[in-house]
Image (tube, rainbow, N blue to C red; front, side, top):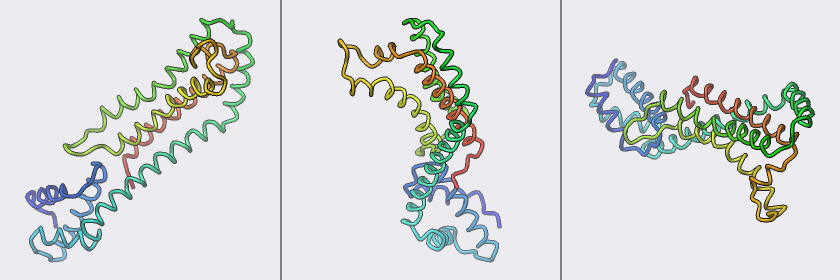
Length: 230
């Protein structure tokens, strides 16, 4: 039995009392509760909506704490799903023998490139773009496709965006971590040290970030297509 507009709105308003941070989880739980109430109505349960609502919450979720526990569990499931999917995509790309063959060939050809500061600078700019374009791409795509409701955050946006920070964090590590082991040379920072890397090494780093770039963008597209947290 379909609920009236007033009953549906009452349930939606009542759900605001629960500490559900993300709108995707809020809508899933709301949908489950509305469906369960409609089934009870269809089976002849004509009690007031408040009574039926509480009955569903107690029976299906284990009360107030049950809903909040479920919300936390759903967030963990989603986080694990996004992280696992990201690892699978990157692992698949990095295990492709064609990538390794191309990397070896490109690294060998890199010996022929002029070993100048200008060439190093060009490589660094390309690597920088590869590291940060997934963040810009994902933010733009999510902003145009995911709208949040008042008082809620987007689970998809929060956890998917966190994956796009990985390339930038790795680049930061590649630039600055070596300096902590070797020490600063004549006051040179990590960036200046990177400008003195051999061209084949820069080529390997560039290809790695190209693969990482495509992996993150593919992850974004895949997650947006699924849009499910279950």
